[in-house]
Length: 589
Image (cartoon, rainbow, N blue to C red):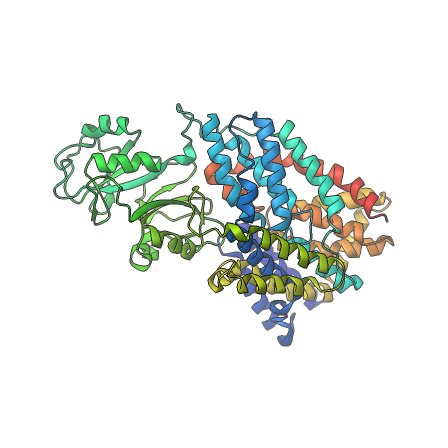
């Protein structure tokens, strides 16, 4: 093995290890690896930033902007509000929500689809008196399956299409993924709706059907100088807490949490009472006990019409991830306060404002209505409560859909390249004020763009150094004599393992060249193997880190890390079992 090969294999090994570890943001890891690759001579200086000008990078960014425009115009809302009914049976509810989620994910970003439908699903669960854990995971998986159906359904499909252009001279079209994607999505949704939901443990159920653990926030309320609570003990407020469905967890004094529940400790002015409950219960209790938030006096609860509460979830890549509110100076910078944190029903010993925020946490923000949305966007969090913070231009919904369909038709007909067609759509949306300049820049997930742009030259360097041939030789030597369909299944299984721990884009960039190389070694068409990588690379179903949608539902669903494999493992095996013959039928060897 040459120096170049050892260097690129070592760099790729460290890169994958850092991505799986997940303690450093993936875009920073990828960009750092790119710089090391340039300094080590694996990537030429003139090619270092070629990924930022790659067509795949541009298409991913444009799709994200179009997703925001569809939401702004009410096109998504037009569909979503017709699918929720608490009177349906659970299998029927899962089927309808899953089909809707898959359909939306085929045309807009699947993260946007899950955020929109998640709040509707939670509301339906409350009305039906069941735990949302039974339906949120099927919904997440359905939105992931929907990404298989079209070229723009998931960024990894775009990467694979562009890789085919580089390798074979022609990219995949908009609906080339549809035959295989539709079959796999239909089988996956049918399994989840009929059988799979029974494999999901019920999390977060409590005595009252409308309350789940994911609704419970740990919050702090200050004891002001003139509060009648001064001189009382937390135990004196237990009856009031029971009345408002709030649990008193302890007391904070001089910045430190006192041991235990501090039930018999007399409260002083400036102390903080630690509370657990849902947002409305906490709100009512604070008003009844004449407590305060931060340095603001609250005399009648949080009833001022100029302030409000907002529940937001912390996705991967959020500014809040790994930091606490004290470090971010949220109140000083954005004018809002963190009232509470929900983490799958856990109770904390740390102070709320000093608690490191994790991916999947649900934050309860409090502040002026006109500042809450800006603060949520600045934090990089996603609102999950059923509140509208942008003006929905419902009269433009059909116009937005028509423009998008016309552009896709031109691209499918080969009259305009897809990237140009999507760019024209964004330009027209901007002219019609369906998206604002801030929407255009704010809706692009820049960490994804940096990740993709950094990994493209590293992937090219890996292939040029002969890394793909080495891995291909290892696979071929261990599968010698096996039928092609079995080798395809093995390639898909390996790709699925990668996708359970890596970003789908990283998985596609690593697995696509290996799939093509294996096909060439077998003397067969590369298309079945590229399609196998596309399907398997999308299916990060075993872990909450395999796909951003899985991480988003973790908090609201009250899931544990180990819950995902219960449904994810049989689903992945089913996708391989169905995917291999389907791929070979539509894309023969």
